[in-house]
Image (cartoon, rainbow, N blue to C red):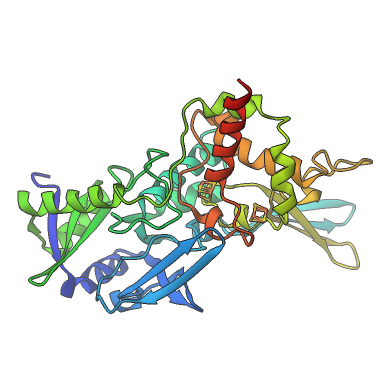
Length: 375
Ligand code: SF4
Ligand code: SF4
């Protein structure tokens, strides 16, 4: 590939959707539903939330139509790509009584082949986190691994930072530099509306070649990088990660956990919207004759009391304080011990979608201040 950057005119954007469909992909990505930007099936560029932005704060979310005609001026909403790659309900197997024995039938392998349109840098990092957890350990989630390896990733370089974004603090954005097949930077001014298209893989090169794109110029590339620099300079939030891994472990008994628990509803919203939370349980449904039992993997949350229920005793984490401490400490500290990196990518979803506006960047800062005051 002599030139890995190209220009796609916005009025030819549908050609990318057509090329992905011709290559066998089902394209999914952001679309406007019920006052939120959520991920769903896309057939053409007009299905995107054209001209819309989102406005986010702790515990608040709204969308606004700016009439700008831009395709990607919002950030991330309540959905994550887990919706497609690791759905909240997954059939595992059926156990069927057969004479004196039991026959086990594994669920059919996933057949979907997705093109993920509009993956932001934080969510690309989140996919890397999920890959490490679900495919990089002794036990591999084969259904996730199958969908993930097939998925074609079209990243979008953010042109706006939301008020709850802090990807710069987590070193995950705003510019995606690897892990995509194609990456788009939208450039729109009075004279033109184009995408700078970066090719990140042989699969991406094949699709780019099918579009017959012209090469980008150095000026185009400088303009694309300027978009990311401006976004980085406008992050809504910051998280000081210096020494945070050990600091949080030293603060396990800090009374601030109880203070947070006074506000926390243990509703689990923060875990449901988080692109890296991966915990599940297994539901078993059996028929009345007890001849057939279906086992289904279902998303679960460390905020649920039942999550640490042990046979014959109370839950291990039987207070909201203990559950919030587990969640925040795992994300920002013990995840490093387990997987060698943070479990938080700075997308800000948990801040926005917490109904009482609990903000992990603010709570981590308060724990740091308390720690330093005592020291
Ligand atoms: S913990 Fe919050 S900010 Fe971090 S990745 Fe999860 S939802 Fe995003
Ligand atoms: S921190 Fe917020 S979103 Fe998370 S469980 Fe508590 S109230 Fe719900």
